[in-house]
Amino acid sequence: MKKILIPMLALGGALTLQPALAQDGEALFKSKPCAACHSVDTKMVGPALKEVAAKNAGVEGAADTLAQHIKNGSQGVWGPIPMPPNPVTEEEAKTLAEWVLSLK
Image 1 (cartoon, helix red, strand yellow):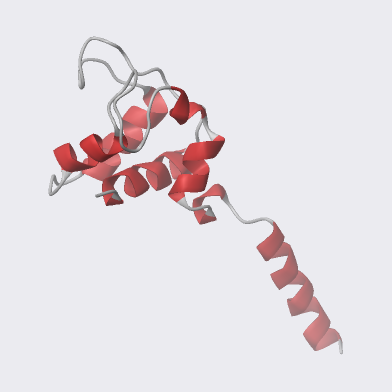
Image 2: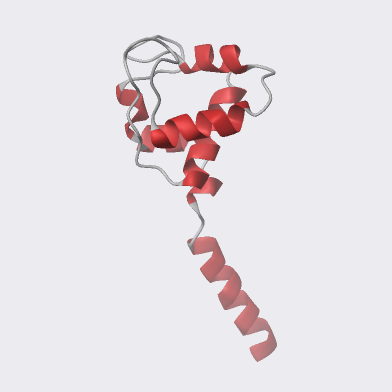
């Protein structure tokens, strides 16, 4: 019984402590302040996320660059309005970047 109980408890604990990376990108987008300036289809303060995906389609290293912009902010990429740094972890930034780049 102990041989089964300990692994089951460990598995249960691991499942309850899922990292933000396990969240899908859309849920993460909705849980962060991203939607204050961006939408999927329409330009707001910042570009539409589909525009970001199209601009970066086929660009090597785009996910890493976009993740850095999400986490640290950027300026001059889409015009004069700067994008401020966002309260995300490295993993969350990467998840968001990969999700944005998957949009068509």
